[in-house]
Amino acid sequence: MKIIELQMLQTLYEQDYCAWVEQIAELLRSHQWDTLDLEHLIEEVVDLGKSQQRALQSALRLILSHLLKWKYQPERRSQSWQVTITRERLNIDELLQESPSLRRFLNDSEWINTTYQRARREAMVETSLSEDNFAIACPFSVDEILDLDFYPNPDE
Image (tube, rainbow, N blue to C red; front, side, top):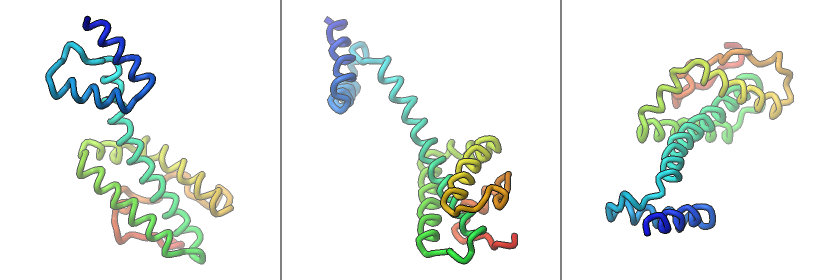
């Protein structure tokens, strides 16, 4: 009987993800451990962690691309850029409050560099400035990136 239930859950996962989540939650609440679709449940738990990392990286990339535009196109600075930078800094703060272990990525220079290179490319496209205008390595410290009051000057 349990094999049939497991196969039904696995089919449900493929056909109706939301219904699968509801069913898994009910099985967990009722402590029906031997009925769980463990294969897909493990996959989903791993994806939860990855999604938080992606959210952190996305917010960081947005901050960096806007800081680069702020630095290299001072004549085009706008409140919109400031709003985006502030919003994403606050988003990162919330993420770190919820999941302090994400901070390890901010201490990983390779991870920061990968994110910076994407932000640099984005800023080049948005500004139409050549890549020679932008620093090859991230010109901002993590403290500056997260500081609600930090905005770079063009001559720094």
